[in-house]
Length: 277
Image (cartoon, rainbow, N blue to C red; front, side, top):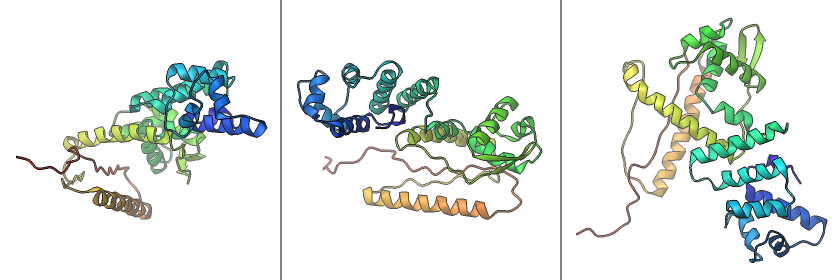
């Protein structure tokens, strides 16, 4: 069975634990529940299927029944908190604590690079900017950014991008992009990306007044749709995004880094069909 530190979904961890115990000998969900102090013989099976959740107290009972101790037990509690979180902030707090516990015990967290990359606008922007300015020092790069960033921050960002494989250092102060893509688990990556979306949306709002109409482009439409129409528009936006990236990839003599935001979101509740007096 994989190390607990490789899991981002506690439901899956419980299922894998059960499967491993079953493989090694006679074991049942009933026995698993009894060992954890639950009267229902199928409770943990429902949890593993995502049909029920573990509370903090129940998570403690389950951890002890599985023989988790010290940092593994603490990691399991944060894994449960991450899976049960109802807000992005709560998810982020739990995930960062999972990272801390794993790194303190020299365990590699597979999502760490992806999570950090989306933690701030600085990472994707510096990744694009550095290759455009061969020979530039961190202060030079910082001064070309529209949003404030210190030279020290740029130095740290460059070090991370090289270490994580997003940039290749060709020579002193000369960088080139690699084909490295940002990957992470389906549970953790959306949490990081949501933080980036919020940060970029704030920057877009400032851009309305910061730049003239010749320097930025804003457009939008307010419209009514059903689920089928919504899905078709989402696919159209995805296709458009791919075409935009393709156009950028064909550009030569690059001289600026820009950001494109695609935003499509509800501004009303779903309307239930009913007669109004």
